[in-house]
Length: 230
Image (tube, rainbow, N blue to C red; front, side, top):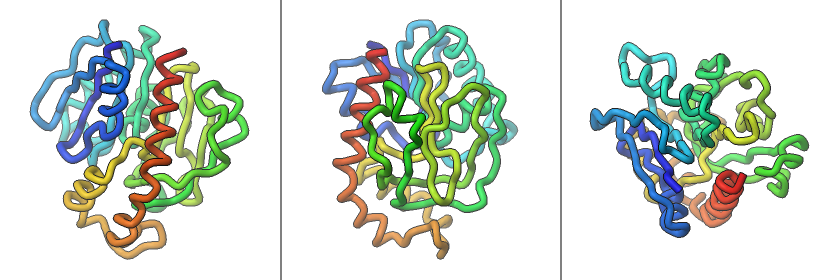
């Protein structure tokens, strides 16, 4: 299977997704927008994974490649491709599908619980996910649900944490793919955002949260297994 990742920042790579691809012997290619790379047309992609990044979906003047990225997401949608959007990636899918993306009331940075809806657990993807899960977050924006999307998860600080669209497109605001290396890189590059707040954890607490990594990475493996099996 050909998996293609859209990467927006050097410090936000695919994390444990790369390990999953290697485990299942899938081909993994990437477009690194920060390096000036141009995304493919998309015909030969089986699963498009859209990663996070520090920019907003509305910053096309500052990041003109966002226009091409949105066109690719739209094409993949019209071709019935499978997609997974994470953080900015979920916001991009929502935006392409006509939903509003805007600053959340709070920035949410660190390890906080997400809660899965009853409707989500009736889906093939989320059918046996737990009621709640402590996951890693690093976002300031949020999105409205696209028309027809199933609301799958929420947190106390952010209403829309996950959605399922057309039974083959997943949007996650939180990070199941993260690794200890990714957390350290995000802390290093995003330290200016780490101001004291109820929903922004201190660095020491974020680092201590690595004990949650085996659990969330296992759920990411299962989510990907189910998505490619559809």
